[in-house]
Length: 343
Image (cartoon, rainbow, N blue to C red; front, side, top):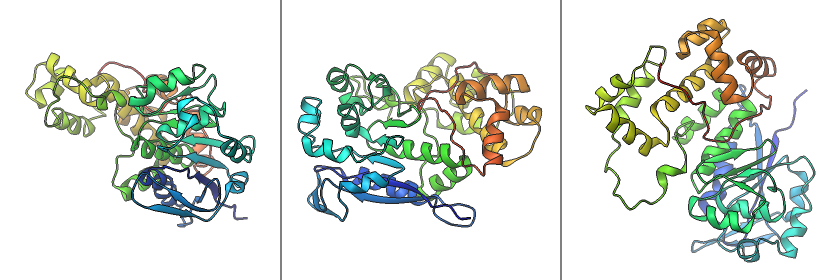
């Protein structure tokens, strides 16, 4: 029996950013099952049917009103520059409150950038982790003191409520949701078709304005490429620094500036991603997966996969191999990877 596609409803508010409005349609719309059938149905609604002004020199015509929210499995709220009392005072307008009242209990809620203000004003983020654009994070925390704001990550995942940082971090979050829903292979295919990395490194720290001029080019690209070809091998920090002709101290500083992570943390994260792919796409024994991913032993694999994903490698494989990559896994926030030393 064929099941219907997961319905994603995007709420378009006045003053929206067209780029962010298009992110859910682009990412979820490219996710297909092995037979080429869409895994998501993406629809857009406004507070009323009709034209919705954007922050550009054109309006967008939306054919659905807020009643569509009652049919959603996932609701996405992109950023808007005209949130009025939502942004200024942390309260919903009567019109917006009436629209959100259509959302059924248990619906997954997602915000992109300052769309998080809408979720917070509605009380959905009370006591939960959340993020927003780094430039708005301090104001966001003052306006919503009950929210656990993390200004350093690209996105947060608290199960049924997810938030992203600014603009392009919405791509990271939507890819994460596809990965969580249907596995790394589907998410990686979407990323390739969209010409973006399937998992972006680091957090918002690398994008925050600093008084000190940043390097004009990435100083650690060659080292990272060198590592990705050798994840299964022992890796020493001195070897990485040698790829860029730097001292270990300079390399470590530059690497953190560019990625938001230490070299060791980044390598562990890449090894976890390699392990995820092997667990999903092969029947290799755990010892073999551990060696191929660079963890050496099954015990080390269990430790790092458990810390990063919240489940054991065996449970992860069971979820994605036995349910056709349709299971929902608990997940940490969007940029946290297990800390570790370079092996």
